[in-house]
Image (cartoon, rainbow over all chains, first blue to last red):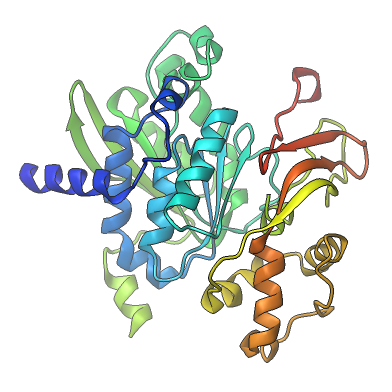
Length: 237
Length: 122
């Protein structure tokens, strides 16, 4: 299984042609890493389910290089409108170029703090967040543009915790939320809070050990727990 | 910034109740031709505030969109072409978005709107 994971990760890495992203951008923008690849691989594994839900509008908060949004748009049968948000203007610019370079024409990037500039009440079908999850002192979160991509403050949760109460308002009735977490973020507590904020299901979907981190993807939705594949089959037949 | 995106943006400055839709100030725009995807257009229409889109398109010189969309229109090639062009091909490269209530200006640089607020606006 480990071999497969590695192969998948490499495949994902090759799936993007990032030549347009000049290396110096990565001084200021989070370079695709293990967490990025876990998220992309997880979305690939979710393809049947996602296609069955026919997502029309997707939002990625903290898009960084734009790889995940680009991968999602290219993965699905019909690409959704893809809004790529980052608080870092350089990241928004790189994300825009990544999408365009890979032929994703339904995407746009903007500079925004979380979703605060968007009017998306119950419109989001796929919401993706790879938050700054590293446990750090709170002050570190705003230390630099690049720190904003990884410094998560107390429990690595300070930025994610600002988004959690807003998710039920953003998601459409068939909307799904995918978020990266590490063990130190207390994933079970994240799931519980998501349920308390009005989501019907919230669970750890995939995990992978990468260097010193146990990375995971949490999936949450407004509809009852998803039996893998069932919904996809039911809707496509 | 595509008009697709303009359709979803609002001013969220503290105290503003009606920050939607934002007015568009165009300094430069481009038409970036892309391949039309009818399935995408047929799906996204339910997410759009159509009158807002139609007005923004007209402002940017994309006239001739109907007042409302019908299922029949969504099968018509010439309508889909106009829709595709106004929604995805027209790009505001330099300009600004202005809050209809407060007048707060958000700049668009290199095609990307900067919607960040100052600390005293949150």
